[in-house]
Length: 98
Length: 379
Image (cartoon, rainbow over all chains, first blue to last red; front, side):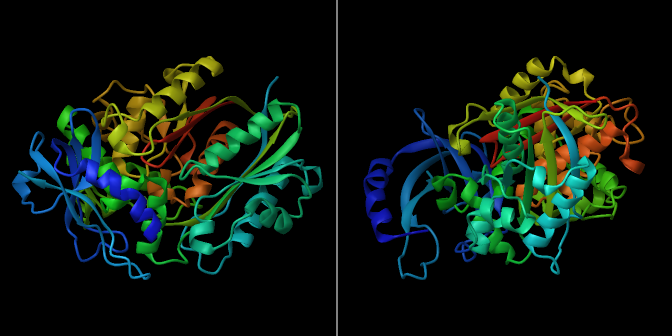
């Protein structure tokens, strides 16, 4: 569940992650999305190796050939899902090929 | 000191729109008590395994809720560990009897999922994942698809081998009157079913189900009692990103290793196993991580019929039909797996009976492998 205070608390984490680069380790393409993500599907979810840690993130601006081991990606800020019933537009981290 | 299972029972699993959670629990527990030759007045504690009642049904406080329904006037609580809730509830029940505080307790695993929209259920199930995974728009099929992708790359596991797991488990389910599905599948049907999260397709996935299972755990020896030889739990990181490897579930390996040591048995001693096949890839991972096959060798062995009724030399895996064929009411699953092993060891499994079953194993996983529970039972 999203709340304004939770999003506010998460800002520092987002700022810290933005612009970092890494490589794709494994992936899937989500065809049947959860609530709030239906207008984005199909979309890849990838595990990215950032050298000191790994993250799970959605891949944007993608094509099929980007889905290979070792593909370099960069962390960007994007709208995460459809606005909630409270009217909050949730922003967060996704990755895009570079 | 030995801990025994004196009674075990399950309801039918499936889309049970005409039945409430109270009725499911009532049926499972009354059958288990009858099976144990005891009654609710002799029960000293109730452990309920459930995951989604709060988020989907708005009902929490399930210890008191079901104690009232079942007429059990005793300490009662809910144990939650995502899809491992049932196995964890049994683990806590076993420990409570081992501690000497209680002599006879009941474990109830129960879940009502089909009252709700599939996308709401999928979102609720993602409560078992990490916040980062939810923000990525991942689903549980998606997380296991990432593991499947890694396993296929590392070991050359094929799409056909994944499909063979579903074909085997639907065949076993067709022999189980309590299973959700009685339809047998072909490799081709699985391979042509709709895509859910690449490389997984619809028929690689366990269904959304309703159902309840119950077990009576006691310190009292009886002729019908099945010995709980080991009850072990292990915990890993909540999300996939913090795992060392994407081609194994480390929690399964650790819980299995501990359980084999405590029970004094090896994988080759197991006659019947119920393993957590929430997706076809999950059974392949489980067979390797529990030590039944070397890494990378399970998929071919399953496809060759080495764990199927009728073609296996010894070990039968998921005789109930597993989560894939029997159904997966998440909180009930871990309890149902043990009910199936009890029936196998008692020689009461009917058409799906494993020959001369003396030692059995049940393996229950929460989330994408953050929790693993392994029980080993002996005759």
